[in-house]
Image 1 (tube, rainbow, N blue to C red):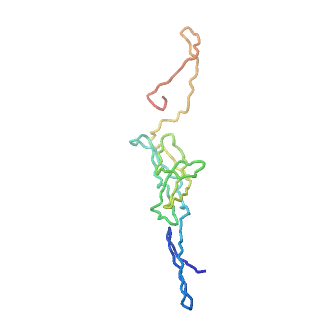
Image 2 (cartoon, one colour; image 1 turned 180 degrees about the horizontal axis):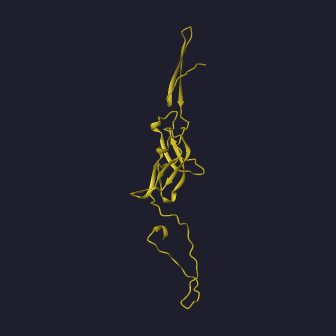
Length: 178
C-alpha cells in the first residue's frame, strides 16, 4: 500500500492518492484523515507556596489565583498561553475539572491546605497535580482559637432551691462568640 506520511493539522484533511502504470493508466482515490487531540496536558505544580490573611474590601481573607501554582505545564497541541487553569481544594475523588480560577481563604483556613491545579487544553482534555499552600496570619487579624467551651453549673433560687430546665445564652459583640 501507499504511504502518505505527513504532519497533519488537528481536524479533517482530504488526501488524494494518484497512481499510474507504465501503460498510461491513471487512477485516483480520495481519503479523509481525521486527527484528534486526545492527550491531556502535563500539569506541573509549584509546591510550598504561602500567603497571609489580609484585610480586604470583602473581609479578612487571602485570595490565590490558579496560575500562581503553574510551574511550567505543557500540552502537545495547545500553546501554553492558551491552556486554561482552574483550581479547587483537594478532594478525595477528583474526576471533573473545577470551574474556579481563584480560591479564597479565611481565618478558618490558617494552616496547610491541599490544592488541585487543573489544566485544560483547547480540545477539552484535562489533568491535574496536587500541591499545598500554607495560609498564615502574619498580621494577627484572626481572633484567637479558643476552642469550644462548656458552661456548667447549678441554677438556684435566692432561697437555695435548684431550678430545672433553665436556658442560658451568652451574648458578645464579637461574632466569633455569639
